[in-house]
Length: 114
Image 1 (cartoon, rainbow, N blue to C red):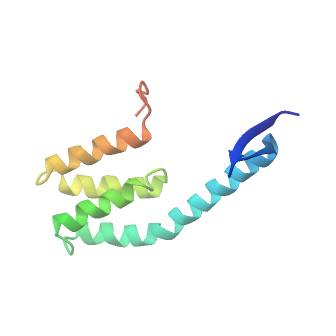
Image 2 (image 1 turned 60 degrees about the vertical axis):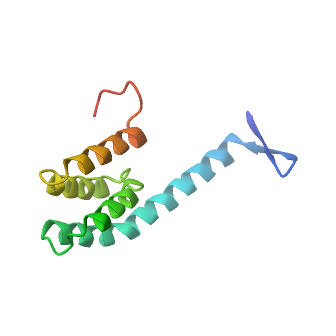
């Protein structure tokens, strides 16, 4: 059996690989749960932007910044892209900066698959 060592508050703790990966799986499930909770909020926001009920570019850009955190979820990524397509003609510089931010956060260097 292999073990992982890590330091916590000056003490060395031993944790089995199984316990470690169970903890990571639990954390991933919690993060997915947060994405599930924010999806309806971002969906409504996206509809408001697309139908021009929200036009304040500062508010839109700030929300895009927050949405980027959850773009690991395909549903939220689709909403993110929808807003960027809406902004494309009028705010190309904003679209470019958010596409660049997405690639920096989610696409590893040398990965040409996206």
